[in-house]
Image 1 (tube, one colour):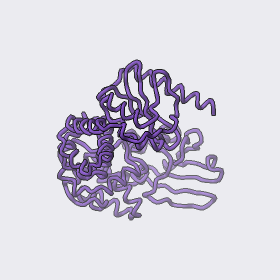
Image 2: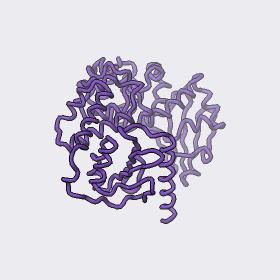
Image 3: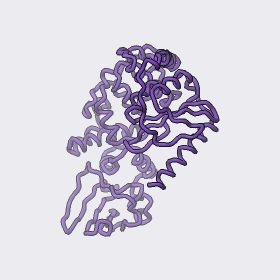
Image 4: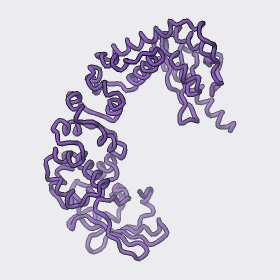
Length: 392
């Protein structure tokens, strides 16, 4: 896609109300694209190095429509669009990626495409994305817009079930792009439709979780999913529970998690496993020294440098920091004992193999720290990061 084009675009509207965009200054060679008016059906053709070329109706042009919409010289061309449509298109383009111009081609020719766009834009995006990837003929794409919605999702490889259609319409992604398309088209909708039908909406996080742990789809815990759900809380407790189960040799942990009725029961399971780990006598374990932490400690933020101290920290604070031993030993994670302003435990995690970020800070029993404590730790962390950059 051509970015930051507003200052480089040379735009004019010809006598046929077609938009003429000259990219020659941007590319350094002759490149002119002409987009016909709405009344003639939106289509585009180009001239590059004196060669005329008609572009595919289902390929994206690469110029943000929002840019054209904010270009004064494009106003006569935009005035040929139905009233109010421009704002709808700008909103669509920001959420449904890479399909704006194929959409224009379709809705300027088909009332069915226009109606589907206005009622269920996610289905229009799904059709256009699939059409591009499967090289569908444009006439076939237009015919799909007048088909039943179950036939539309069937053509896109999702089956023809009304239950699956309802789930597709519940999808609540921040935006729809290549990753979301792959998630939608590889998910086993038919098998999960019965279990997910009662959920108020579906996002990428819940789909990723159920792909990774299919046993959870029938759990009462997942049935609690909705607006009040905290992914941050769930991810921390869930991943810690998996790690502790692995350390304790518990193989059926997913089944035990699926029995939990809500987050309270999952937290109880987590805490029971932490108790088992913390009750182990660290004195019987060989002393293992960890690598030097990435950020030096202070009198009040003390690095935990061996597995015995890590175990004692978990036992004293009644949480599962001891289950992070393997990650700390590999240099992927670092734990610190925080003494002031509150007694807490801090975890730093490795990011992209080269930098670190604050992963978690908790009081005893995994309770939240105060804002004062968190700001104090952030100031220590950010100051160390700035000093390290200056040293480099």
